[in-house]
Amino acid sequence: MAEMSVRYTYRVRPSRTAEGLLLAEWNRDRWVWNECVARSRALRLAGEMCGPARLDKDLTQARQANQWLRDGSSVAQQQTIRDFGAARTKAIKDIQKRLAMRQRRGFPVLKKKALAHPSMNYTRRGFSLQDGQLHLAGGIVLSVVWSRGLPSDPTSVRVSRDAAERWWASFVVKVDSEPLLETGRVIGIDWGVTEIATTTDSEFDLAHPQHGKTAAAKLARYQRMMARRRPPKGKPASKGYQTAKRQAAEVYGQVARRRTDHARKWAKGVVRAHDQIAVEDFKPKFLANSTMARKAADGAIGQAKRELIWMAAKHERDLRLVDPAYTTMDCGDCGARAKHRLLLSERTYTCSACSVVKPRDKNSAQVMINRAGFLPAGVDRIRLDSPTETRAA
Image 1 (cartoon, helix red, strand yellow):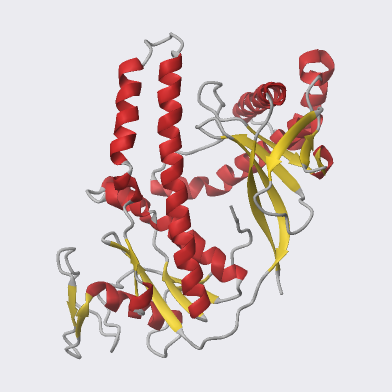
Image 2 (tube, helix red, strand yellow; image 1 turned 30 degrees about the vertical axis):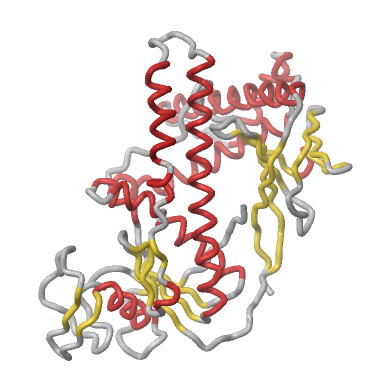
């Protein structure tokens, strides 16, 4: 059995005193982050290196000079520097890819008080669990709603507050994989918009749940309330505006949880019933600029794909991601490729070589199996998936 790192997330109900201490700690960590961003920019323009060691030294000097900064936990502040370093390293490694894709994301940016949600990371020496409560460095004690037990001792914890002003504690723990009995079955999965997933086994086709469409009326009501109560530029928001904003965030959160639950249950069923899974390596981001953007976003294809990868890794199933190029043009039976691309309005695939006629998405799902090498025909454009970090909410 393989060991993997997963996250277990729990609701936290802090007292007013504890919440005040958390917000004060967040303000210090946010200041540390913004200082890292500013100094990194200045040194980068000067052609100098700005690594974690130098930022740690600057933090030590700042704590000696400022009592308000010294009142906070050095563990959380040092972890903020580590998080900044990891984000900057990822930005440097991916910069060529981002430029090629014409994306605007770049180096870490400043965290604004009015926009950024509080989030603090603590390593093992910065927290402890005693009598069912979470004790953080700095004398902060939090009551955790233990909806389930932790499988092992946590190595780190992230305390955060979402847009609906609810606090959460997310623990990183080590767990062993849970192998399942072999079934001898294979499945190919093709992603879409009308149906989120079309498979070679019709029993596991994933219909569009339309959770966002169901909640649209309630969400529109709160958005109208926000529009009527929106404060003038430079003026503080009223309590009515803040209440409407929190209610809209709660609706968004409910929709997100429903999408996750729907995708997770489907992924669990697919993994339990099949040993080998061929999945289209689909990037749904391009749909954001199309006329199908709203429905595609509501379907949460990316979420379903992530849950499927996680379930396959957890239960040690053979999952392979397949390049989607030409999957609508290749025949799943004989492997012949059509001379012209099919229009989106053409939902039936007809092979000119073997004369087979089948639904377009069903044919693409069969092509996934062929390319993954689970069947002899056409083993190409395949990527073995080996996720190094997974998550359980």
